Amino acid sequence: MDRFLIDGGRPLEGRVTIGGAKNAALPAMAAALLTDKRVVLHNIPRVRDILTMRSLLDEMGADSALKHEREGNRLVIQARKIPDQTAPYELVKQMRASVLVLGPLVARFGHARVSLPGGCAIGARPINLHLKGLEKLGATVSIEHGYVEARVDRLMAGQIHFDSVTVTGTENIMMAAALADGTTLLENCAIEPEVEDLAALLLKMGADIEGAGTSAIRIRGVGRLHGAEHTVIPDRIEAGTFLVGAAITGGHLVLDRIEPRNLTAVVAKLAEAGVEINVVETASDSTQSHALEVRGRPPYRAADVVTQEYPGFPTDMQAQYMALATQAAGSSVITETIFENRFLHALELARMGADIAVDGRRAVVRGPVRLSGANVQASDLRASASLVLAGLAAEGESLVDRVYHIDRGYERIEEKLTRVGAKIRRISES
Ligand code: EPZ
Image (cartoon, rainbow, N blue to C red; front, top):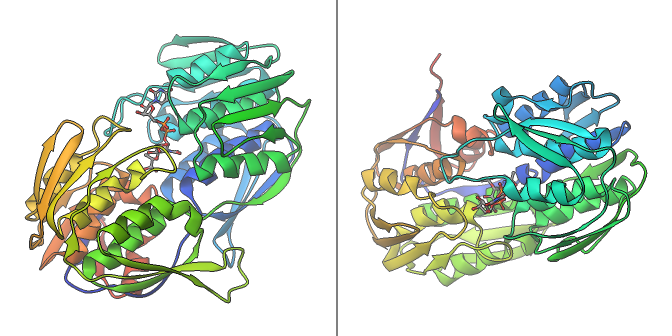
């Protein structure tokens, strides 16, 4: 149970390099199950969820190697044989994105046994749309002893209209359809950049896909897929978190290796609140030659936000935005439309002096307030980021408990923050 001790009130100053996207790397790793050839992934963040997915692939029989390289980490996966098409409860309960192995296993081996993910702090998060999609492709799906069991001789193409937009649901069925017999049409798909990035990898593996990044995706199944090399996109949520970090501390940061077009809604909302953000060209030879420069000058203007599917304001930035809204003059109304229970951070922010009234999926944040350091507890990945940001802005010391949540999606965040002037220290239980 590591904790962060933060001594707040210091502006963040300097340059931060943004890592690869966790939510692009996870489906890319699952996609490696679709072939017996080598899949080489670059710009992989060394975060706990990636290590969990790697353990899952290794446990099923794949070989993998993770190595640091100049730009992030390189991960090589080869799923020659997968004798055990089971994703066990012990691993799935740590990370619900493990469900992403379901589509590839059924597609390549005609069988998958995947533990049901169970409840989550931010919402019920069922996987009914994933299962419905597989059934539409001809799989027989049953649930026994807490496990999804899916079987089929060979998946047959179909037409699938998702009842509601689901990111990993779109990814799972897109991967399954890549090896199905015939042409599948998916409608009402998620258009997140991570979905598009997965399709880019699948195309390199020999898949035949059109329309990824739009709400209608057409997939012509092929007999087999081959190996490929792919660099995953930058993490737009990590970038958004650091934008708020500069804003809430009144600092000045340049974020390197980002893709500005994936951050449009976040940048627009922060600018509406009065945060100064500019896209700057960098001379780096990296694949990402853009950077974002952000200057913070609290207090800000209150601005309402409604979380939406991409390209709307991401739910994964809602908690961080709530922390910033405590430094805005007036009332900011935050409406969470994606998950039914994603305001757990509000009560912890209130311990630091925030004035937040939560009513179901709507929260009203009144400001500006003077945040003061306190002992707080993280409940999920993005909530923990919000508490760290508030701790950086607060007067005095904060102790943020359960930072194992933040390690799931941020690579050594305390080191990145320290390099730009934060006073933050990890306290390990040991
Ligand atoms: C992905 O989760 C992300 N995770 C989440 O990021 C992100 O919050 C979410 O998309 C929304 O943007 C990964 O990509 C690994 P959904 P996912 O299926 O795919 C309901 C983070 O912080 N639903 O798009 O699980 C569901 O309950 C994480 O990095 C069903 O009802 O989200 C939710 O209310 C947290 N049935 C809504 O749809 C289904 O079968 C959207 O969920 C599937 C989803």
